[in-house]
Length: 260
Ligand code: GRF
Image 1: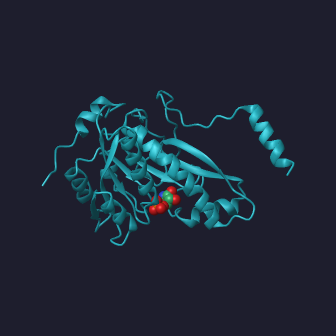
Image 2: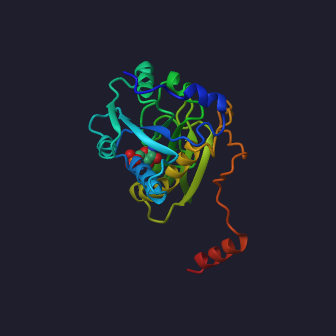
Image 3: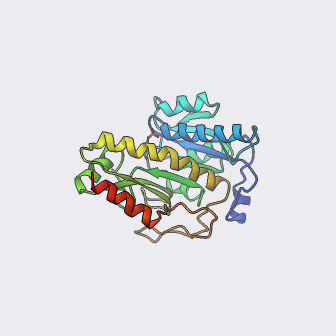
């Protein structure tokens, strides 16, 4: 039974700000522990408390996983969201029907290790997001997940890693980049310590980007990345996620660092 009609058609016509003034119904797909899901739930809950329980920009209505034992499902249940196990991750019709059943506006991948079927990706243009624990377009693509990402960063000798939030397209880790946050690679790091530092940044950045997209403050504006590379978000939105550092402060910080 369909819970209620999707607003998808209307939202595509509206383009940027598709959901302005309405609460976006969010589905989260996750394969593992779901700490990013939890940070999203906490962020949205905190917002509701701050606004005296007024409906916020987004609400997590569904958590789905390819693994029945994923802790993310428990977290979803505890937050009152519907949960589902995806028995066949390649079955785009089943996933599309599930999302329709819950009238989902926005799909958020949070540690989802499977490729979303292209037929589903095409139904959510500019409305499907992913978080990646490195600075794309480096250290991404098929097979680059979990500790492998951090091992590759360490192996490369890079002194900076980070978080990338991007729209999802038909390929792993390739859609338009929305936001990035640098995270230092420190001497003595291994994949575990680096992953933990990056994850802390994910928990801060991802909920805010999801909320901004849900509220229509950030949008892809129909822009598609070229076949084999990233494109960048049009700077037309009121939200700008790049970090700005005042040069004098940067120099002072560097002096301090180098004199240690
Ligand atoms: C995160 O590092 C995320 O970037 C990656 O998978 C990890 C998921 O962690 N895609 P969690 O399940 O949210 O704790």
